[in-house]
Length: 210
Image (cartoon, rainbow, N blue to C red; front, side, top):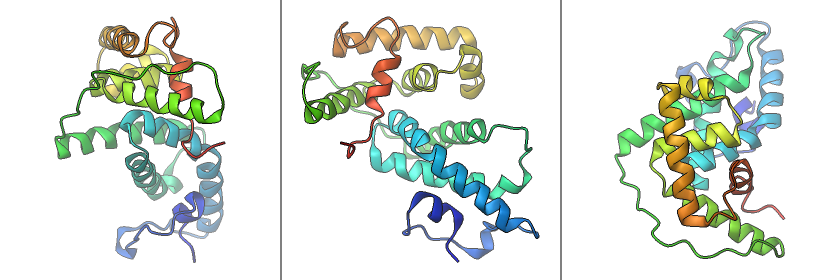
């Protein structure tokens, strides 16, 4: 039988080990699997866009989402029915990305010059603009990038962002201000308005969408 995470994401290359307890136990397992698949298919694309903005790379983002969906599935049968699964998955994305970054200890190369993008144009130009914005986000320090993604793309209040990142609300405000300032240096005021939510939304569109 196809694993629920594979069914939900359409990915067949994942390797599952039966000893890791990926299957929910009990007579309601099949129903839980159906609920999980429905959730992952409905909300997976949104969380993938969030992961792209957090990581700056589509392949890494896909791996991150698949890993976190697997983690979520392992505890799916224990989740309180009154709890929003989005919040669980979002926290897993942030924490797993943080642990991966620490483990790899990769220093991100700064983007010194970002090409001037065209604001209007056909679909190809829009995708080029989205790539430009993602590169600019990737040039930010990881914590600043996470704050902007959670604050403006996920539209979370500052207190919730602070809780997710394990810092104070004041720190969130500082990272947000500095991150927006840096994006304006890279992209210009025209692309980074007072509310950068539109920039994050653009950067999160699929590279293969038309």
